[in-house]
Image (tube, rainbow, N blue to C red; front, side, top):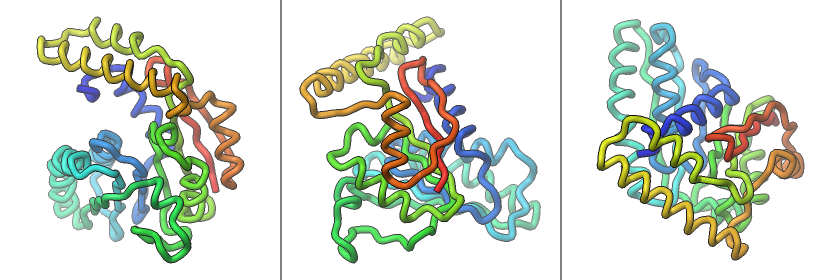
Length: 244
């Protein structure tokens, strides 16, 4: 349902704009990819540009906790990847690579050296997206430190968070103002009910959301140099670009 919400589509545009276009041979990490919506956005962006003639194709890696989420990500992205592959062959180039791994980001960030469930070399990623993830982790600072380690010098990170005590009903109202089917209307109500449960968790101290200043501070503490930021997702979230 989210991919039909205009506020969410605008949010993905902002995240992609802050991250910048993916170039030849670049390796992109989607840390907490969920159902793969940002990966879909990236593939569509690649398709919208000039015919691919990469000698070294870009690589997308999605990490998430749930197998269902990773399966959804693959199912949503596979057809777009096939279209890119066909176009790449026609242009005598190589096709982009998609990969996925099941990872608990809290365990990954908190593992002792050499004991990670998934290990990446220092500076192995060119771009990292961490979309609406930090608030739900027990050790967000440790995750940011790990993302700093695996990002190459000069590489770019985009972080985002819902704002503290955000009003998800505003997004729901924007969605309901669109032309929606009965099924989409019920999905919208499910989303609003889930948002209510998240708000209760926030009030109980289980989740911590970030204003722009707090997101910048977290990035600085992890060693990043923060750059542009934008309000997004119906003005209920904030997104920040940072450089290593």
